[in-house]
Image (cartoon, rainbow, N blue to C red; front, top):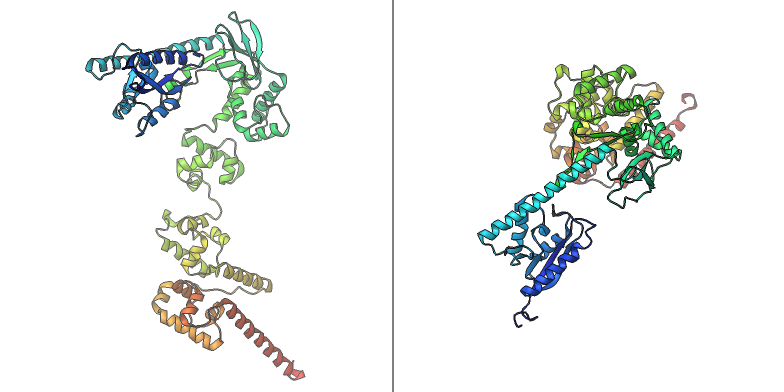
Length: 559
């Protein structure tokens, strides 16, 4: 009696698992058997871990076993043994090493696993280890055999025309039948068969839903509407949605691809054996059975299927090029947006993946977009310096640049090329030594507009030669130039620097010192923007007053 007293009982945790929801007494029977074993061998159940209705093939779907393994590796735990009914309750892992790995984690932590209903002791001896491995193999083989039997029975039921699982499909009803295929009742949403000898078959559903299906096929095949437009039209017209709250792209596409509208039930599309990743079955493995009368003609269904196959995956590049060439002959031009909106061409992302760029596609179909830059002899600019050189040359020739000018001129790449190399177009302007500030660009644009309205040619701004300027002017030369201009005018601005014949462009000051204000500070002159603008305004006002006074003092005959 002293051996089984509460003071000497070994604390243990029990793990219980059942694989089917209808095995309602399995957990209770396991707990009763483990409790009897614990009383006979001096164990005290202190904690219980349960996985009700979970398959023993994987660990990711068993939170009870996951919690048990997490508690095992903790320094403080309320148990020293783990009691399991048999090897199959621990798991039916298809990899026998996986089952042994989880058991070894417990053994390494000092908490061995004890199988209560097995005829061997889990003591680690060679014979007992061999018996345990055989039991694991039997547990895994049981799952494999059961999976094959269930699949064989499902295929037989599908060939007869019985529906296997899943909710009802739009436009059809689920009807419960007896063992003689006599109808019993219509199943509503959430209802299922109650007896093993009962089966479920498909029947044509409400007339309003059937009408919606026919309208979908008509709009898609005859009116050439897109799937998204069909979904929007159904939503706007308050069409019946069946068991779903709204219409969507995926719902319309499933209806267009479902052979049940032809009265044919298709089964075994995919296979997922023993909790493995699902894989698509080949066409010869499909089970097709006629279960109802068709609500769509075969010709209309095949027409929709041909249009759906246009955007299928793994289309050869030659077919995609032929589709783009057909679009070019129809429209006379090509753009990425036009290709994406076309019904019979692949989307632009597919063309980018197959050919590298849309420009390559345009070359292969013989299309040259307006403003597309073609390098001479097929050689693209090799470096950023060459891109900047072309940009300076364009500015020297025209006196200004902008996005429209760059895209329209064939001697320079497009704006996207500059953006890809420099990030922003204004950064390319800055590195090329041409006006790049927003205020300055707006001012130059207003000057060109003013000159155009007055019928005068716009003022041409020459591009400085950066390598020559950098070698001609040192930092001290630049600062001395600022001091000279300040003594001459009383203040310094970018306009004064630009109009002085002996001064370099303001861009050089900005590139050398970061900004004009920083250059003013280094030169020891006024560098507050408000004071500079105030002095400049006062000087311009004084000059205007002087000109006005000179005109008033002129003799009457000379005015």
